[in-house]
Length: 101
Image (cartoon, rainbow, N blue to C red; front, side, top):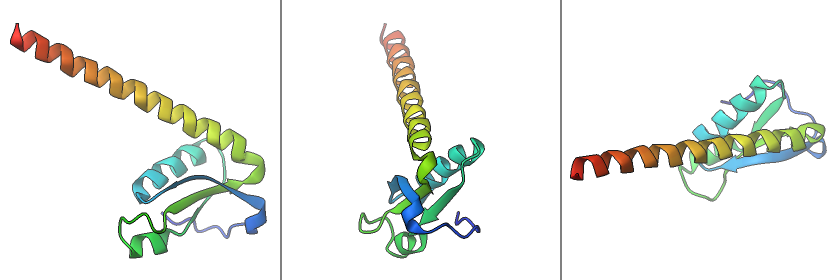
């Protein structure tokens, strides 16, 4: 998952997402990269070395000028995921009520 590009100085970057689940960070990175944003993953090795503890989350960084757009894209993705999960829950509930009828 590590980006092979050397990141700019830390004072030019902003964290837009972090998680102890590196797969979640990878999905967020892929979404932002598909939108044309340059992304950098920090602390991946440290996080992986300690397992899935909350001690050192993997961080997704973008250039400061892209941070607002990146956060909006990630927020939109989270909203769509919640909507989809509610729809799936409703389908399951509907199928259970049909079974019990």
